[in-house]
Amino acid sequence: MGVSWHPSKLLLCDLSMKNQTQKTLYIFFSLLVLIFLVILSLSLGSVKIPITEVLKIIIGQEPVKASWGSIVLQFRLPKVITALLAGAALSVGGLQMQTLFQNSLADPYILGVSSGASLGVALVILVNGATGSLMLAGIGFRGDLGIAVAAGLGSALVLLLVILVARKAKNTTTMLLIGIMFGYITSAFVSLLIYFSLPNSVHTYLSWTFGSFGGVTWSQIKIMVPAILAGLVIAIGLMKPLNALLLGENYAQSMGMNVKKTRFWIIISASLLSGIITAFCGPISFIGIAIPHICRGLLKTSDHRYLIPATMVIGGAMAILSDIIAQMPGNQTVLPINVVTSILGAPVVLWVLLHNQGKNRVS
View 1 (cartoon, helix red, strand yellow):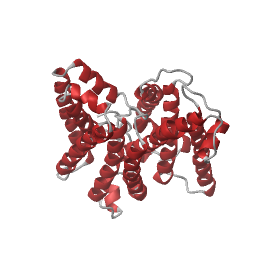
View 2: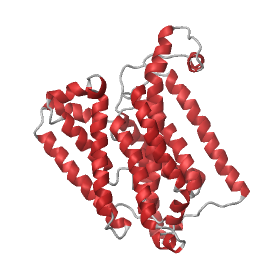
View 3: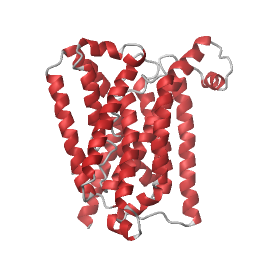
View 4: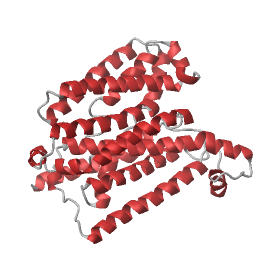
């Protein structure tokens, strides 16, 4: 089950004007860092483009080299937008799951959404054999979008099953176990498919599991944006209920909150955010776990009125930074994005484990 987390022991936001201003300044500074990383990401790569030229391209002016405009607008800008959306979505989803289950190691994939997406992609790539690899490199719906649809359907199926079973769950612990079991079941099917598949198909599937922000086109971004915005709007609307859940479900019920209804919308929001990102980018690790803890540490609060906007901004910045590192600027080599997010995120999770262990010893 992981390390138990006791948010009721955390100090909620001090409502003094000074602390409010300080937290707002932290978020504003994070936003400036995010903007800088966006511009830097558009500038760096196998072809280095001066920042001044990047700014000219963004505002619609002609760059010194016409090819620079194509590189920025057709390749780098969609990738940066995808990374920004992925970082924000996974961070907010992880924050909601950690609050709902009161578990510091909960992430947006904890209910098995990622495993469902993996099963959908595995069925497309592994069952079709050599055809699966052609689908990845294909054109239109049968290309990357076909894989995204398969992943989305797999995520939706698992989410539907979790919600149907969760209606009979009396508490979040039961729901957590249900999600984990669904994850194990889908993972078992994926392992079975891998065992009986051709090596080329297995390689194609494994490449998808590494995660990437670079394969999303403008047409696919038009699908991603509304879905992610819907998930984020739901999360923003749940700020007060999430704060109430920090002190436990019994307290929330005593305050007149409909816990089952709130739980349902939290699951919908987090699953929508993680499912759409997994569908288009693959399973991106550690961002959903690490960023909420980073934000709590920076802002020194567990108030979701500050944490949700902070996780959106800092999560987006972390995803873009990870992509910059993965691109290895000036080099033709591109690292899998999950390699970088794991290197950056794992130390945060280790710190949480050691920090919680120290608190348990003191208590």
